[in-house]
Image (cartoon, rainbow, N blue to C red; front, top):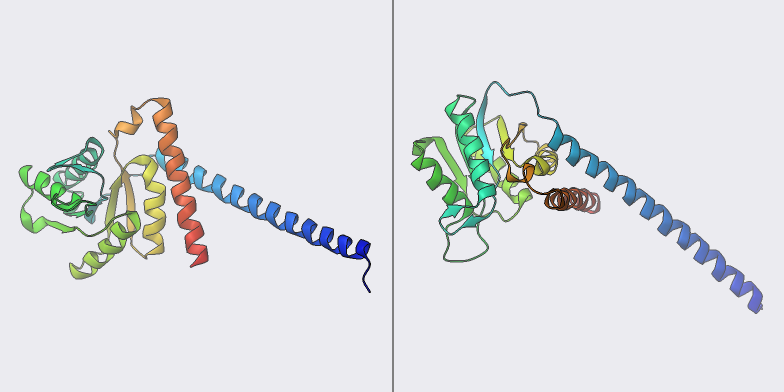
Length: 214
């Protein structure tokens, strides 16, 4: 028969292995989180070489205030309009649904804004069902296939660019980053920028972990 001391030794041994496993898992997650934070920082601080030409600029959805884009969304739309007006892209792709019924979707708000700036309807493509960045880009891939678009420029805020580009690569989308140079986050207080930085770092980490699990 097993003595009480033997049973306690086995319990202690298993607990020790469990602690080692938990500690190793925490360390791995910490390393992955640090890498994600570094990626977010690098994309936000380093301006990429300007792309000479792409088929379309994709504006990732952001909040809409009624029938108007929020300040953050407006900056993204304006940057895409600049790319279009300077001949860097031939078309504009707007993405984004809405969490509430009875309101225009983010994509529809962006389309309406672009039309007022003189962009012809035939140069605007949009989807209005996506709820997050993954869906934004998954639906964009479908639009690219339907409209024979091969190469895009992704337009979003600097801190959001690392996650957006990672998702695009995983979806097999040929894309170049073009962060908004006038994002309100660049002029925000240190506390606000730090909050957004952490939010995007954890967002990228969560996406990576979900990819590993699935």
